[in-house]
Image (tube, rainbow, N blue to C red; front, top):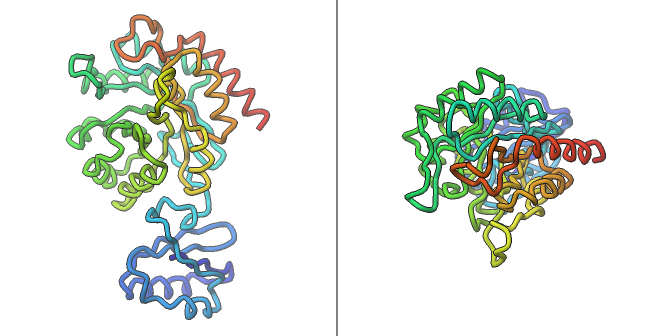
Length: 332
């Protein structure tokens, strides 16, 4: 249930109403907008009389919410959420580009890539230290050493870092990371999500391999229900019957998520397509569809990459893609 209060409501009146709601055994999520205050009621609201609420002088409107995701719901929070990732803001009209290699392989590789993507206009550095791979025999990442190298690249460039976590026991290594990524395979690792909900770090939550939009939002709800509301959603393609591309890039998910939720939405054309030649057009399409940020894989020598070289741009290619992205943004 949500209660929209009039802009004439005083702090004392709002506080009194919130106290009454809490006495009825429901939690209250308060969202202050420019023209009104929205109170989102979470819990058993069956005993609350809507007609009685609507009769109050400070109440503009009362509505029951049927969707199971509450905190992530735009009805509870009409204003766009803006997430600050180490000084880079995402959402609410703020746009960012996260670029870098799939895996951190060496000091030279990550620092060279960081400098090249920064020169091209990237605002964050991505790179995998802990790598979930389909085969147990594939490169699994440099782990703690990879985190150290990412932080060296940050020191050299000033770019905030986004990197993936696989286990809550690894949180100790992520204390200096600016944006913690939850990969597609862990979107429904609920114990991990709850642990991340107790930390104060922004979280980039990727859509699962075949997850519905509702399931993605419910996973965000797991994190938010534990107190961490700095969540960024990521569309990275889903598995369908099509085999030409690595996944099927669900561009419609971007405006749908904006319609349903106040959380920022990132698009990952690299994982979505798995093909270097498709990253440029899909990046442009994602920006046109309203993405708040892009996550793009860039490697100084993709043919020798230890993971996902086929979907990685060279730094020179990334320069061209950034020009096209900026051109689309200037139009929309």
